[in-house]
Length: 109
Length: 116
Image (tube, rainbow over all chains, first blue to last red; front, side):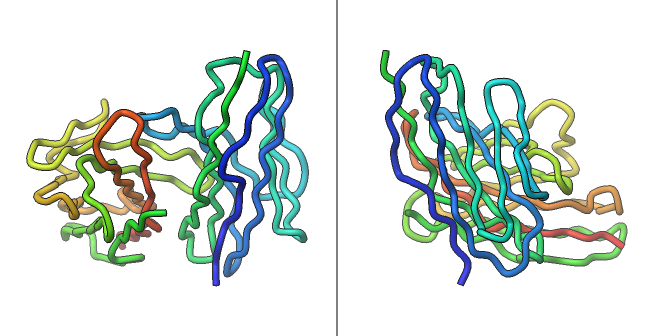
């Protein structure tokens, strides 16, 4: 079957670094997405990886290992506004998105 | 987590015809549903937000007469692409959430539309 696993909740301190992991199993693979969603709002796109390696965008970076079915989202210099849910989604060979349940990130002062 | 089902998963239609995509919340009541469009390897684009029993709120640049959204019940919303053209070919995704500002939104698996 197809599934995505990511931690339910993580806590980190303002100014620190946090890594949110995601493992996936899909029928074929056409890329992995990370989204940020604040409570009550629509999700916003953070990153897309289809090749192995690290993609850096400012304070956020995303990593993919296709052979391991693994990705992570790295958030640096955490700010209180980074408190949100982070959704991992993999696209299968039919371009269907398989969603993780999301990781709720709590930032403490 | 809660289940949101989209149907069909994929559809091919002729240019000029209309296509309806359904989004159902299977085990919860969805007071709000979102419709997104995703082009290959790009971000999700929010098209519209619909609340049960009221008209959908469309994002800027989205033609409401072309993309008809109906949220007639607490478990079903439909998106109809009218007079489809090849440029409408895309991946359409819905998400549904219960009421309340902090309620989670759950996503459907998406519908791949190809207009030929």
